[in-house]
Every structure is written in structure tokens, then in C-alpha cells.
Image (cartoon, rainbow, N blue to C red; front, side, top):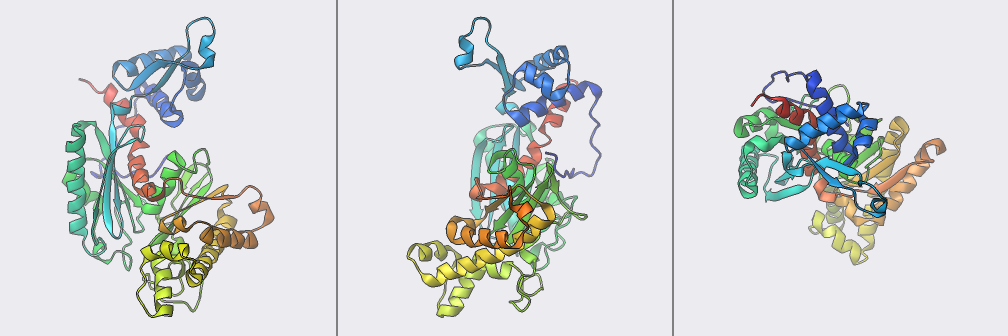
Length: 406
């Protein structure tokens, strides 16, 4: 799947040459399918077998692809066992950054997406962009030093942020959501600090990319991912392509009005889904009802103790989320809905009323093949999707590096 790209320098990329094109096709096939034989690569790329063999030889020689004999019952047959090819994991690396409301988290992955390093710094992010960007720079430097790799092997930095982001990744729509970030251009700030290509997207878009590449939505090209956290957002992939909208800010499910006379939302509207179904909203409702403080992190314990008020509040939230998702189902006709974020951890207290509301409000033709599942990646979805923004361009980047004069 191809994702939006923003070159932090503003310069145009060097076009892929015809020589590099064969390398790109082979590398992309291996990135998508992990392990393939030469015959399978020829089938999937449309390249002649002789061309595939020549390209593979060069890629192995440059340390970008590894080869091993296939193991298993089929190898017991007479003759030479098939040779299986895969990307060399250490051929390159990518950085992922999660800029949330209450923390900055960084990971380093190898070129196949395996996490090699992971660290989080809790901090109040919304009003302190300078502190958050400094923390990000500190984490990135620590990752490079701890893993012991040269910066030349890092393809770039992808960042997911808890704010709507324009399609080019440069402008945040942070008003009322991350107030201190209004006017900040994190792509340019991060690129100037770390000297690497930077891409940035909304955290829900990063989440759907991660679930599509590594998690619950693998093999599914029509999926909606909803993140139920202190902010609520959605990311969608339609026919294998991420749905961004005209300006790049599609998927703001949390600011869909579901209760016309409800509470005023931080976005300025009244009765948004986020005012009803986010963990802070649910905790706030209980606190007002009980006349004592309740925190978001208390909800799981209250459910386990069988508290009826908490059960009802979660069920009402699930029904509200289901109603909002029903509208998305009718418009987008996804095969799969993946639910992530902190609230997904409450399980069937949320999922059952959500499923009922969706089934009630959609047509039977839309419901026939629709599945609704929890996130497979949990809290890791946003940061792994951020790194995947960079890995999506790895075949082209590696092909250019191989073709560059030495």
C-alpha cells in the first residue's frame, strides 16, 4: 500500500531509473510477501526469470537480500531444494515516533518492521511542543547509540501525532486539540534537528497502516480503524489505499456530532462523540454522578469489581461509537473494523453494544461480510505505523542506494 509522502527538504526526489525499476519490483515483492522463491518473484513482478535471477544476484551481493534453502516435507524430494529469498533485516532501519497528548515514544525497526529499540518519555505534550520535540530528538539519538548503527543506515523518521494533519504533513490543525502546537511545523522542526527525511501523519492513520501491515487487517484492503483514546479518530484504507480526503484530514470520527444538546467539545462543537465515548469523558461522567474524582485508568478496575454505573457508562459509549461507525460503514462499505486505543481493553462491555448499534443502523447487504475486531497491536499501533510510513518507501530507497556510484 502506498502512503502519503512528504520530503522535509521540499526537494523533488530523483526519479527511479529503468535499471533501478527491476530492483524496486523485486524488493517490493519481498517487502509485501516476506519470503518468495525466484519463480514466485517472477510471477508477482512480471519480470522475466533471467532478469529476476540477475537482480537477485546483485541484491544479495549488496547485502539487501538473503537466500536459504526451503525447509519442510517438500524438501525430501530428490533434487536441489528451492531457494527462498527474503529481505536482509539489517539492510536498513526506520524510526517511528508517537507524539501523544501525554507522552513521546520512539522506536527503531529494521527494514522488515521488527522493533529493535523502544522507549517512552511521559510528559504533558499539548502545551509544550518545544519540550516534546527535544524529547523526540533525545530519544532518536539514544536509539542510534544503543543499537549501534550508523545514521546512514536509517531511511528516515515517521511520526504519528494526536492532531489532524494536512495531506503534505506540514500543517497541523491543532486548534482546541493541541493548543501549544498551533503554527508549529513538526516535519520541518524534526528534520532540522535530526538530519533525516521526515514524514508525519495523524495517529489514527498511523494505526490503520500498522494494522494493515502487521496486525488485525493483514490481507484486508477495505478497513476502518478507530482509536478510542483521550482523543477519538479513525483511519481508513479503501481498495488498498489510505483515504485522506481533499486536505488530508478525513477520519475525524471523534468530532462527529452524536448528541445535539450534549457537552461542548474542545473542538468548539457540541455533543461530539469524543465528549461521550473517550475514556476521560466516561470517567468525567462517573465523577459528576458520584461526586468524587474518577480517572480514566480506574475504569478497568471498576468494571472488574462489577460496578453497575461503570458498566452502563461503557455500554452507552459503545452504542454511541457503533452509531458513528454505522455511518462510516454505509459510506465506505469496509470489510473490517478494527477497534484500538485504551477503551478497547474493556472488551465485550464495549464491543457488544457497539456491534448491536452497527447492525441496527446499516443495511443487511453491508453487514453480510463485515467483521469487527479488537486491535492486534494495541498501544503499539500508532508508533509502528509511524515507522511503516518510512518502510513503505524502502524498496525505492534501497534500489537508489544500490545503484548509486561508489
